[in-house]
Image 1 (spheres, helix red, strand yellow):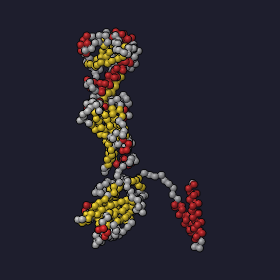
Image 2 (cartoon, rainbow, N blue to C red):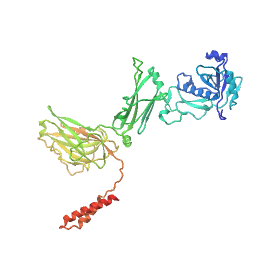
Image 3 (cartoon, rainbow, N blue to C red):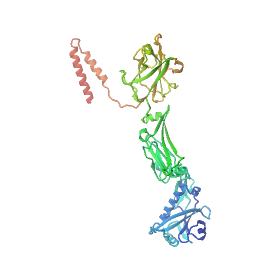
Length: 519
């Protein structure tokens, strides 16, 4: 053994007293290893992962000790020794050359062979082998992580999970193998920028369900991975990939993966089906910054307004792609701050009764949630008068079934997707539906929709719009240079030669443009 081995090992032949205590025949095949430290109480539990792990470790250590002799080790049990703070390990050795049956190796041969090794810290005296060394697990500084136990082994130490806890380090890919990551029931969840992972212990599920189980992740399109002790999965945040569920509220996006656990088909009747749910919750601004699609549905609200007891009229707000008002947006989109938005609020009806009715847009505002009553508002129009300097009417408000306006894209404090809302009312043929604006500057105070809504008024909404705030690479603009060339050429133009010189100016501009492009 190595000179720095740090354990004390005693091996003694089992006598009649041990035969009675263990109910095993150790006369010719059994050995007892006495080590100078106590094992943790968790090892007394016959089903603990710690006990299984430590039996594997000791079996390998004893096999290594006797590696030059063709033997096969079978570890039987751990027991407190008669001496305080010591442990007896019972094992048997069989002839490894005999594969068809267990042929015991005589105790005398094993003791003689062990003594002949002359290994450091190992002595054989009176049928007992002593392995001397300190108790490493008695260190003042903890050697193992939370929820794990320090186990002295033959020449070293190992960390194993406490009873009811399972090592998930193979899923986390963070810790070295000698230091497990122990989680109760093996339950583990990890939420990263582009990855979600989860795990649960197989022994826990088998114990809870009462037998072998079948597992399915979400809708079953992705398989569940298995290790010796864990069921686990890794998915991206793409809903279409593994059937991950996604929910969006005002401030956060919630991704959910569900593991369905059932007893295997051999069980005809089962009342113990289990669902294990993993959730990853991200702030919406974080998801935006990470460039992850929010997958929000486009909102184009249609609001019914009761004009009288027999007629219900619809109001609708729509965002169009340009001033032609031919193509509207139907999905959540990302726009630049330089883009212009083209809105239409319209009276939707096929009733001839509505021919003489007019539509009036009273106020418009934006929020960072779908709720038009959200207290955080950016006011665009108030009492029919523009508040934002980029707000422009593209039709006369109050003289038709519809009103059109444009506004430049903008940001709000939280930099979340934007929803646009307008309060509109329906006017009868005998009412003046126009709102007059004075030159007085309107302040951007919050719109009180509840107070403003009348009998024939309603709020309509559209969105969401996502603002692209990423810095774009600078592209050289030559328009200022073009204008300089035009001014120089135009300054030399005489009235009589305007046609000829304009052609020359155009050629000069195009030549200059090509020179700039080639630079």
